[in-house]
Length: 459
Image 1 (cartoon, one colour):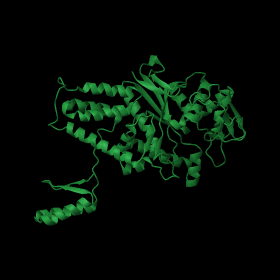
Image 2 (cartoon, helix red, strand yellow; image 1 turned 90 degrees about the vertical axis):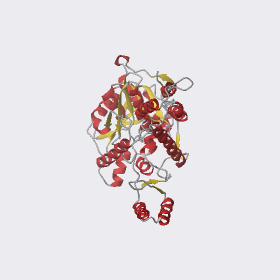
Image 3 (cartoon, rainbow, N blue to C red; image 1 turned 90 degrees about the horizontal axis):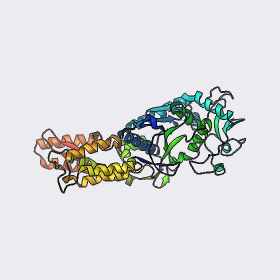
Image 4 (cartoon, rainbow, N blue to C red; image 1 turned 135 degrees about the vertical axis):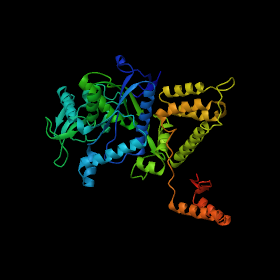
Protein backbone atom coordinates (compact mmCIF):
# COMPACT_ATOMS: atom_id res chain seq x y z
CA UNK A 1 0.00 0.00 0.00
CA UNK A 2 1.76 3.14 -1.25
CA UNK A 3 1.50 6.32 0.81
CA UNK A 4 2.42 9.69 -0.66
CA UNK A 5 2.74 13.15 0.86
CA UNK A 6 0.06 15.43 -0.57
CA UNK A 7 0.98 19.14 -0.58
CA UNK A 8 -2.75 19.95 -0.76
CA UNK A 9 -3.62 18.20 2.53
CA UNK A 10 -0.15 18.49 4.08
CA UNK A 11 -0.17 14.85 5.11
CA UNK A 12 0.61 11.37 3.79
CA UNK A 13 -2.29 9.65 2.06
CA UNK A 14 -2.81 6.18 0.63
CA UNK A 15 -2.50 6.24 -3.14
CA UNK A 16 -5.85 5.45 -4.75
CA UNK A 17 -6.69 6.36 -8.35
CA UNK A 18 -9.28 9.13 -8.67
CA UNK A 19 -11.45 6.86 -10.82
CA UNK A 20 -11.62 3.47 -9.07
CA UNK A 21 -13.53 2.01 -12.00
CA UNK A 22 -10.38 2.42 -14.13
CA UNK A 23 -8.42 0.01 -11.93
CA UNK A 24 -4.76 0.89 -11.45
CA UNK A 25 -4.65 3.59 -14.12
CA UNK A 26 -3.00 6.87 -13.08
CA UNK A 27 -2.84 10.21 -14.87
CA UNK A 28 0.23 12.24 -13.91
CA UNK A 29 1.21 15.74 -15.05
CA UNK A 30 4.54 17.41 -14.29
CA UNK A 31 5.44 20.98 -15.24
CA UNK A 32 8.15 20.90 -17.88
CA UNK A 33 10.91 23.37 -18.86
CA UNK A 34 10.76 26.82 -20.42
CA UNK A 35 13.06 26.28 -23.40
CA UNK A 36 15.00 29.54 -23.64
CA UNK A 37 18.30 28.23 -22.20
CA UNK A 38 20.12 25.01 -21.30
CA UNK A 39 18.55 22.88 -18.57
CA UNK A 40 20.49 22.91 -15.29
CA UNK A 41 20.97 20.39 -12.48
CA UNK A 42 18.06 21.94 -10.56
CA UNK A 43 15.79 20.84 -13.41
CA UNK A 44 17.44 17.41 -13.32
CA UNK A 45 16.60 17.16 -9.62
CA UNK A 46 12.85 17.30 -10.37
CA UNK A 47 12.74 15.24 -13.56
CA UNK A 48 14.94 12.47 -12.15
CA UNK A 49 12.72 12.21 -9.08
CA UNK A 50 9.53 11.84 -11.12
CA UNK A 51 11.21 9.41 -13.52
CA UNK A 52 12.01 7.16 -10.55
CA UNK A 53 8.51 7.57 -9.07
CA UNK A 54 6.76 6.72 -12.34
CA UNK A 55 8.97 3.69 -12.98
CA UNK A 56 8.38 2.44 -9.44
CA UNK A 57 4.61 2.79 -9.86
CA UNK A 58 4.82 0.83 -13.10
CA UNK A 59 6.75 -1.90 -11.29
CA UNK A 60 3.80 -2.03 -8.91
CA UNK A 61 1.48 -2.66 -11.89
CA UNK A 62 0.10 0.87 -12.14
CA UNK A 63 -0.70 1.96 -15.68
CA UNK A 64 0.74 5.50 -15.63
CA UNK A 65 0.22 8.10 -18.34
CA UNK A 66 2.93 10.69 -17.66
CA UNK A 67 2.29 14.03 -19.37
CA UNK A 68 4.80 16.88 -19.38
CA UNK A 69 4.41 20.29 -21.02
CA UNK A 70 7.12 22.30 -22.73
CA UNK A 71 6.75 26.07 -22.44
CA UNK A 72 7.88 27.25 -25.87
CA UNK A 73 6.57 30.82 -25.60
CA UNK A 74 6.81 33.45 -22.86
CA UNK A 75 8.57 36.75 -22.12
CA UNK A 76 11.89 35.07 -21.37
CA UNK A 77 11.88 33.35 -24.75
CA UNK A 78 10.91 36.52 -26.61
CA UNK A 79 13.61 38.56 -24.84
CA UNK A 80 16.32 35.94 -25.38
CA UNK A 81 15.42 35.67 -29.08
CA UNK A 82 15.72 39.46 -29.41
CA UNK A 83 19.09 39.47 -27.63
CA UNK A 84 20.36 36.60 -29.79
CA UNK A 85 18.85 38.13 -32.96
CA UNK A 86 17.20 34.87 -33.98
CA UNK A 87 13.63 33.80 -34.65
CA UNK A 88 11.92 32.79 -31.39
CA UNK A 89 10.86 29.40 -32.74
CA UNK A 90 14.44 28.58 -33.79
CA UNK A 91 15.54 29.38 -30.24
CA UNK A 92 12.92 27.10 -28.66
CA UNK A 93 13.62 24.25 -31.08
CA UNK A 94 17.33 24.43 -30.24
CA UNK A 95 16.83 24.29 -26.48
CA UNK A 96 13.98 21.75 -26.63
CA UNK A 97 16.30 19.44 -28.56
CA UNK A 98 19.07 20.00 -25.99
CA UNK A 99 16.64 19.31 -23.12
CA UNK A 100 15.49 16.02 -24.63
CA UNK A 101 19.13 15.00 -25.20
CA UNK A 102 19.85 15.73 -21.52
CA UNK A 103 16.86 13.59 -20.49
CA UNK A 104 18.06 10.72 -22.68
CA UNK A 105 21.56 10.92 -21.20
CA UNK A 106 20.08 10.71 -17.68
CA UNK A 107 17.93 7.69 -18.69
CA UNK A 108 14.75 9.69 -18.11
CA UNK A 109 12.43 7.85 -20.47
CA UNK A 110 9.18 7.47 -18.53
CA UNK A 111 7.36 10.47 -20.05
CA UNK A 112 4.41 9.29 -22.18
CA UNK A 113 3.83 12.62 -23.94
CA UNK A 114 5.65 15.94 -24.26
CA UNK A 115 3.19 18.73 -25.14
CA UNK A 116 4.36 22.10 -26.51
CA UNK A 117 2.29 25.07 -25.34
CA UNK A 118 1.99 26.59 -28.82
CA UNK A 119 0.36 23.42 -30.14
CA UNK A 120 -2.66 24.09 -27.88
CA UNK A 121 -3.59 27.71 -28.68
CA UNK A 122 -7.14 26.64 -29.60
CA UNK A 123 -7.61 25.00 -26.18
CA UNK A 124 -6.11 28.02 -24.39
CA UNK A 125 -8.50 30.40 -26.15
CA UNK A 126 -11.38 28.04 -25.31
CA UNK A 127 -10.57 28.10 -21.59
CA UNK A 128 -10.18 31.89 -21.60
CA UNK A 129 -13.63 32.24 -23.22
CA UNK A 130 -15.19 30.09 -20.48
CA UNK A 131 -13.53 32.08 -17.69
CA UNK A 132 -14.79 35.33 -19.18
CA UNK A 133 -18.31 33.91 -19.55
CA UNK A 134 -18.31 32.76 -15.91
CA UNK A 135 -16.96 36.19 -14.85
CA UNK A 136 -13.76 34.81 -13.38
CA UNK A 137 -11.84 36.89 -15.92
CA UNK A 138 -11.94 40.43 -17.31
CA UNK A 139 -10.40 42.32 -20.21
CA UNK A 140 -8.22 45.43 -19.92
CA UNK A 141 -6.02 47.37 -22.31
CA UNK A 142 -3.19 44.84 -22.57
CA UNK A 143 -5.04 41.54 -22.29
CA UNK A 144 -7.41 39.22 -20.43
CA UNK A 145 -6.78 38.60 -16.72
CA UNK A 146 -7.98 36.15 -14.07
CA UNK A 147 -9.65 37.77 -11.06
CA UNK A 148 -8.31 35.88 -8.02
CA UNK A 149 -10.83 37.53 -5.68
CA UNK A 150 -13.66 35.71 -7.48
CA UNK A 151 -12.31 32.24 -6.64
CA UNK A 152 -13.14 31.50 -3.00
CA UNK A 153 -10.63 28.63 -2.68
CA UNK A 154 -7.69 30.72 -3.92
CA UNK A 155 -4.63 29.89 -1.82
CA UNK A 156 -5.69 26.41 -0.67
CA UNK A 157 -2.55 24.73 -2.04
CA UNK A 158 -0.01 27.25 -0.77
CA UNK A 159 -2.07 28.21 2.30
CA UNK A 160 -2.07 31.88 1.29
CA UNK A 161 -4.96 34.31 1.22
CA UNK A 162 -5.80 36.66 -1.64
CA UNK A 163 -4.28 39.51 0.40
CA UNK A 164 -1.03 37.55 0.85
CA UNK A 165 -0.91 37.12 -2.91
CA UNK A 166 -0.74 40.88 -3.41
CA UNK A 167 3.05 40.88 -3.08
CA UNK A 168 3.55 37.96 -5.47
CA UNK A 169 3.57 38.76 -9.15
CA UNK A 170 3.88 35.93 -11.64
CA UNK A 171 5.34 36.04 -15.13
CA UNK A 172 3.66 38.22 -17.78
CA UNK A 173 1.22 39.91 -15.42
CA UNK A 174 2.53 43.36 -14.58
CA UNK A 175 -0.35 45.55 -15.72
CA UNK A 176 -1.37 48.80 -14.00
CA UNK A 177 -5.12 48.34 -14.65
CA UNK A 178 -5.46 44.98 -12.91
CA UNK A 179 -8.20 44.73 -10.30
CA UNK A 180 -5.96 42.85 -7.86
CA UNK A 181 -2.17 42.88 -7.82
CA UNK A 182 -2.18 39.06 -7.75
CA UNK A 183 -4.35 38.76 -10.87
CA UNK A 184 -2.57 36.97 -13.70
CA UNK A 185 -2.68 37.03 -17.49
CA UNK A 186 -4.72 34.49 -19.44
CA UNK A 187 -4.17 36.18 -22.81
CA UNK A 188 -1.72 39.00 -23.59
CA UNK A 189 -2.12 41.30 -26.57
CA UNK A 190 1.05 41.10 -28.64
CA UNK A 191 3.31 43.96 -29.63
CA UNK A 192 4.15 44.40 -33.30
CA UNK A 193 7.41 42.43 -33.12
CA UNK A 194 6.05 39.57 -30.95
CA UNK A 195 4.55 36.21 -31.96
CA UNK A 196 0.74 36.32 -32.02
CA UNK A 197 -2.41 34.38 -32.80
CA UNK A 198 -5.94 35.50 -33.65
CA UNK A 199 -8.46 35.50 -30.80
CA UNK A 200 -11.92 37.00 -30.12
CA UNK A 201 -10.14 39.82 -28.23
CA UNK A 202 -7.46 40.58 -30.81
CA UNK A 203 -3.99 39.37 -31.79
CA UNK A 204 -2.15 37.96 -28.82
CA UNK A 205 -0.43 35.12 -27.04
CA UNK A 206 -1.13 32.93 -23.99
CA UNK A 207 -0.34 33.73 -20.39
CA UNK A 208 1.99 31.30 -18.59
CA UNK A 209 -0.39 29.49 -16.23
CA UNK A 210 -3.18 28.67 -18.66
CA UNK A 211 -1.09 26.51 -20.98
CA UNK A 212 -0.93 23.76 -18.33
CA UNK A 213 -4.68 23.54 -17.67
CA UNK A 214 -5.42 23.69 -21.41
CA UNK A 215 -3.02 20.79 -22.01
CA UNK A 216 -4.18 18.67 -19.06
CA UNK A 217 -7.86 19.17 -19.92
CA UNK A 218 -7.12 18.07 -23.49
CA UNK A 219 -5.53 14.79 -22.35
CA UNK A 220 -7.04 14.13 -18.91
CA UNK A 221 -10.29 16.07 -18.66
CA UNK A 222 -11.17 18.35 -15.74
CA UNK A 223 -9.61 16.12 -13.07
CA UNK A 224 -6.70 13.72 -12.78
CA UNK A 225 -4.67 11.81 -10.22
CA UNK A 226 -1.29 13.45 -9.63
CA UNK A 227 0.25 16.84 -10.36
CA UNK A 228 3.99 17.20 -9.79
CA UNK A 229 6.66 19.86 -10.04
CA UNK A 230 9.36 21.76 -8.23
CA UNK A 231 8.56 23.31 -4.85
CA UNK A 232 8.95 26.87 -6.14
CA UNK A 233 5.96 26.36 -8.47
CA UNK A 234 3.45 25.86 -5.64
CA UNK A 235 2.79 29.59 -5.63
CA UNK A 236 1.69 31.25 -7.80
CA UNK A 237 1.82 28.79 -10.71
CA UNK A 238 0.07 25.73 -9.28
CA UNK A 239 -2.32 27.91 -7.33
CA UNK A 240 -3.27 29.57 -10.63
CA UNK A 241 -3.84 26.20 -12.32
CA UNK A 242 -6.28 25.17 -9.59
CA UNK A 243 -8.11 28.50 -9.80
CA UNK A 244 -8.49 28.27 -13.58
CA UNK A 245 -9.60 24.67 -13.98
CA UNK A 246 -11.86 24.39 -10.94
CA UNK A 247 -13.58 27.65 -11.93
CA UNK A 248 -14.15 26.33 -15.47
CA UNK A 249 -15.37 22.85 -14.52
CA UNK A 250 -16.97 23.41 -11.14
CA UNK A 251 -15.26 20.17 -10.08
CA UNK A 252 -12.62 19.76 -7.39
CA UNK A 253 -9.93 18.85 -6.85
CA UNK A 254 -8.14 19.52 -10.15
CA UNK A 255 -5.58 16.92 -9.05
CA UNK A 256 -6.12 14.50 -6.18
CA UNK A 257 -2.46 14.48 -5.11
CA UNK A 258 0.16 17.23 -5.41
CA UNK A 259 3.83 16.18 -5.20
CA UNK A 260 6.67 18.70 -5.01
CA UNK A 261 10.43 18.23 -5.12
CA UNK A 262 12.82 20.02 -2.77
CA UNK A 263 15.20 22.79 -3.80
CA UNK A 264 18.72 22.21 -5.10
CA UNK A 265 21.27 24.74 -3.87
CA UNK A 266 24.99 25.06 -4.61
CA UNK A 267 27.12 25.47 -1.49
CA UNK A 268 23.99 26.68 0.34
CA UNK A 269 23.27 29.36 -2.27
CA UNK A 270 20.53 29.50 -4.88
CA UNK A 271 21.92 28.59 -8.29
CA UNK A 272 22.25 31.61 -10.57
CA UNK A 273 24.44 32.78 -13.44
CA UNK A 274 25.29 36.02 -11.61
CA UNK A 275 26.87 34.05 -8.74
CA UNK A 276 28.83 31.87 -11.17
CA UNK A 277 27.38 28.66 -9.70
CA UNK A 278 24.99 27.87 -12.56
CA UNK A 279 25.67 24.27 -13.63
CA UNK A 280 24.00 22.91 -16.75
CA UNK A 281 23.15 19.23 -17.02
CA UNK A 282 25.45 18.93 -20.01
CA UNK A 283 28.39 20.55 -18.18
CA UNK A 284 27.92 18.21 -15.21
CA UNK A 285 27.76 15.13 -17.46
CA UNK A 286 30.91 16.15 -19.33
CA UNK A 287 32.82 16.75 -16.08
CA UNK A 288 31.50 13.78 -14.10
CA UNK A 289 28.86 11.51 -15.67
CA UNK A 290 25.12 11.13 -16.12
CA UNK A 291 25.20 8.16 -13.76
CA UNK A 292 26.74 10.21 -10.94
CA UNK A 293 24.06 12.90 -11.30
CA UNK A 294 21.29 10.31 -11.32
CA UNK A 295 22.64 8.67 -8.15
CA UNK A 296 23.39 11.99 -6.44
CA UNK A 297 19.76 13.05 -6.87
CA UNK A 298 17.98 9.76 -6.26
CA UNK A 299 19.78 8.80 -3.07
CA UNK A 300 18.07 11.83 -1.49
CA UNK A 301 14.36 12.00 -0.67
CA UNK A 302 12.48 13.72 -3.48
CA UNK A 303 10.96 16.26 -1.04
CA UNK A 304 14.23 17.06 0.73
CA UNK A 305 16.56 19.88 -0.27
CA UNK A 306 19.87 18.94 -1.86
CA UNK A 307 22.96 21.08 -1.37
CA UNK A 308 25.32 20.47 -4.25
CA UNK A 309 29.08 20.60 -3.69
CA UNK A 310 32.16 18.92 -5.12
CA UNK A 311 32.43 16.97 -1.86
CA UNK A 312 28.89 15.64 -2.39
CA UNK A 313 29.85 14.57 -5.93
CA UNK A 314 33.02 12.88 -4.67
CA UNK A 315 31.01 11.01 -2.02
CA UNK A 316 28.52 9.86 -4.69
CA UNK A 317 31.37 8.60 -6.88
CA UNK A 318 32.88 6.64 -3.98
CA UNK A 319 29.54 5.06 -3.16
CA UNK A 320 29.03 4.05 -6.80
CA UNK A 321 32.50 2.49 -6.79
CA UNK A 322 31.43 0.41 -3.78
CA UNK A 323 28.27 -0.66 -5.61
CA UNK A 324 30.32 -1.62 -8.68
CA UNK A 325 32.75 -3.61 -6.56
CA UNK A 326 29.83 -5.38 -4.87
CA UNK A 327 28.15 -6.27 -8.17
CA UNK A 328 31.48 -7.54 -9.49
CA UNK A 329 31.90 -9.67 -6.37
CA UNK A 330 28.40 -11.15 -6.77
CA UNK A 331 29.20 -12.18 -10.33
CA UNK A 332 32.42 -13.90 -9.32
CA UNK A 333 32.37 -17.75 -9.56
CA UNK A 334 33.67 -18.02 -5.98
CA UNK A 335 30.91 -15.83 -4.45
CA UNK A 336 28.71 -17.55 -1.83
CA UNK A 337 25.82 -19.79 -2.83
CA UNK A 338 24.22 -20.03 0.64
CA UNK A 339 20.48 -20.70 0.43
CA UNK A 340 19.32 -18.84 3.54
CA UNK A 341 20.19 -21.62 6.00
CA UNK A 342 19.40 -21.32 9.72
CA UNK A 343 21.48 -18.55 11.22
CA UNK A 344 21.86 -16.73 7.90
CA UNK A 345 19.72 -13.78 6.80
CA UNK A 346 17.36 -14.30 3.88
CA UNK A 347 17.18 -11.88 0.93
CA UNK A 348 13.42 -11.59 1.56
CA UNK A 349 14.13 -9.68 4.78
CA UNK A 350 15.93 -7.00 2.79
CA UNK A 351 13.30 -6.99 0.05
CA UNK A 352 10.55 -6.32 2.60
CA UNK A 353 12.46 -3.46 4.21
CA UNK A 354 13.30 -2.00 0.82
CA UNK A 355 9.66 -2.15 -0.29
CA UNK A 356 8.47 -0.63 3.00
CA UNK A 357 10.80 2.33 2.44
CA UNK A 358 9.68 2.89 -1.14
CA UNK A 359 5.99 2.59 -0.27
CA UNK A 360 6.44 5.25 2.42
CA UNK A 361 6.37 8.28 0.09
CA UNK A 362 9.17 6.87 -2.11
CA UNK A 363 11.75 7.07 0.68
CA UNK A 364 14.81 6.44 -1.49
CA UNK A 365 17.42 7.22 1.22
CA UNK A 366 16.08 4.36 3.38
CA UNK A 367 15.88 2.10 0.34
CA UNK A 368 19.46 2.90 -0.69
CA UNK A 369 20.57 2.20 2.90
CA UNK A 370 19.18 -1.34 2.47
CA UNK A 371 21.45 -1.80 -0.57
CA UNK A 372 24.51 -0.79 1.45
CA UNK A 373 23.48 -3.09 4.28
CA UNK A 374 23.31 -5.93 1.75
CA UNK A 375 26.94 -5.22 0.93
CA UNK A 376 27.92 -5.82 4.54
CA UNK A 377 26.16 -9.22 4.38
CA UNK A 378 27.90 -10.31 1.18
CA UNK A 379 29.36 -13.49 2.63
CA UNK A 380 26.12 -14.87 4.06
CA UNK A 381 23.67 -14.22 1.23
CA UNK A 382 23.06 -16.11 -1.96
CA UNK A 383 24.81 -14.14 -4.72
CA UNK A 384 22.29 -15.09 -7.41
CA UNK A 385 19.35 -13.93 -5.26
CA UNK A 386 21.04 -10.62 -4.50
CA UNK A 387 21.84 -10.00 -8.17
CA UNK A 388 18.22 -10.66 -9.13
CA UNK A 389 17.03 -8.27 -6.45
CA UNK A 390 19.42 -5.54 -7.64
CA UNK A 391 18.31 -6.00 -11.25
CA UNK A 392 14.68 -5.66 -10.20
CA UNK A 393 15.16 -2.42 -8.27
CA UNK A 394 17.40 -0.96 -10.97
CA UNK A 395 14.39 -0.86 -13.29
CA UNK A 396 13.42 2.36 -11.51
CA UNK A 397 16.71 3.47 -9.91
CA UNK A 398 18.78 3.04 -13.09
CA UNK A 399 22.13 3.71 -11.41
CA UNK A 400 23.29 0.21 -10.39
CA UNK A 401 23.93 -1.52 -13.71
CA UNK A 402 25.40 1.16 -15.94
CA UNK A 403 27.31 0.42 -19.16
CA UNK A 404 31.04 0.78 -18.67
CA UNK A 405 32.44 3.83 -20.44
CA UNK A 406 35.91 3.19 -21.72
CA UNK A 407 38.30 5.83 -20.42
CA UNK A 408 39.77 7.96 -23.20
CA UNK A 409 43.52 7.52 -23.03
CA UNK A 410 45.58 10.65 -23.79
CA UNK A 411 47.98 10.30 -26.73
CA UNK A 412 50.90 11.17 -24.45
CA UNK A 413 50.14 8.12 -22.26
CA UNK A 414 49.78 5.86 -25.33
CA UNK A 415 53.17 7.01 -26.59
CA UNK A 416 54.81 6.40 -23.21
CA UNK A 417 53.22 2.93 -22.99
CA UNK A 418 54.56 2.01 -26.44
CA UNK A 419 58.02 3.29 -25.51
CA UNK A 420 57.93 1.32 -22.26
CA UNK A 421 56.84 -1.84 -24.12
CA UNK A 422 59.82 -1.52 -26.48
CA UNK A 423 62.17 -1.25 -23.52
CA UNK A 424 60.56 -4.35 -21.99
CA UNK A 425 61.10 -6.30 -25.22
CA UNK A 426 64.75 -5.22 -25.13
CA UNK A 427 64.79 -6.31 -21.45
CA UNK A 428 65.90 -2.82 -20.45
CA UNK A 429 64.01 -3.02 -17.16
CA UNK A 430 65.51 0.13 -15.69
CA UNK A 431 64.26 2.36 -18.54
CA UNK A 432 60.89 0.57 -18.55
CA UNK A 433 60.53 1.22 -14.81
CA UNK A 434 61.44 4.90 -15.24
CA UNK A 435 58.64 5.31 -17.81
CA UNK A 436 56.20 3.43 -15.57
CA UNK A 437 56.96 5.94 -12.77
CA UNK A 438 56.48 8.84 -15.20
CA UNK A 439 53.07 7.42 -16.24
CA UNK A 440 52.10 7.04 -12.57
CA UNK A 441 52.88 10.73 -11.95
CA UNK A 442 50.56 11.57 -14.84
CA UNK A 443 47.80 9.49 -13.20
CA UNK A 444 47.96 6.28 -15.26
CA UNK A 445 48.81 2.69 -14.40
CA UNK A 446 50.14 0.09 -16.84
CA UNK A 447 49.09 -3.49 -15.97
CA UNK A 448 51.20 -5.94 -17.98
CA UNK A 449 49.46 -8.81 -19.78
CA UNK A 450 50.35 -11.29 -22.56
CA UNK A 451 48.47 -9.29 -25.19
CA UNK A 452 50.07 -6.02 -24.06
CA UNK A 453 49.65 -3.48 -21.25
CA UNK A 454 46.20 -2.53 -19.89
CA UNK A 455 46.16 1.19 -19.24
CA UNK A 456 44.02 2.34 -16.31
CA UNK A 457 43.48 5.77 -14.82
CA UNK A 458 44.49 5.92 -11.15
CA UNK A 459 41.47 6.86 -8.99
